[in-house]
Length: 311
Image (cartoon, rainbow, N blue to C red; front, side, top):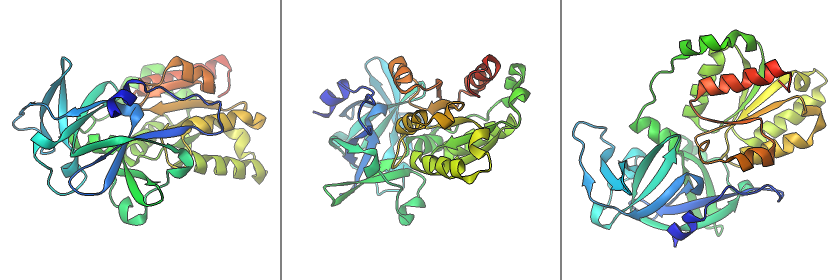
């Protein structure tokens, strides 16, 4: 049933007052429930035969051949510090997309897909914040807690990103944006770190918050401060899936406020290859950029600047 729903996955429209988060629920080696954003999921299936890869990451248990594609399979329980996994014969894998690559997460049982409003998705309690692998939590029937996996952090453990070659950006005249004021909205620690390094390199002055709700509250404070902070804001760079308020709703709310007509809005997400042109038009974002694609991010920022549109 989960796969049938996954085949019908689509980016939700924003005609309603709030968008929703669809989570694919699963367990690992106990009775705790975990979830992954359905946007990321290609399919869930019983664990196939795996080809072993000697000398690879201790969290990588093999390669699955899924529909003609070699998919690295990660022991998710081990990666996030849970107890030992169950036998492969009784386990499943969840194939996910991140950027331009696919990965399989080994889980115990795939349960079902449950839809939540973003207001139901909240930051994890302090005891779970020590684990960078959990980005947020939600409650099912006010009883069971669902821990939402920070896919980006898990993948950074398994497959650390190569050091960014910022020198390759010089030909794009990065200095044109030096001193520009930007609001960065990102809940993932690892993604926040990398984006901050990029913004530091191009000389942008930025403020960082961890959810759309925090961003909207900060924008309201700036608008009432009388210090010209809102008027000086050139762009908002936001992730999509974040607790309390996602990036899609944040952009919708910003576009309602005529005082921010000058602000450029960029979606910066590993869902960039999944989000389609219909969404970009529907929410009036200026661009959708995959995380880590800094040449494109710099290019679209400069394009808006040189054309005199916003920025």
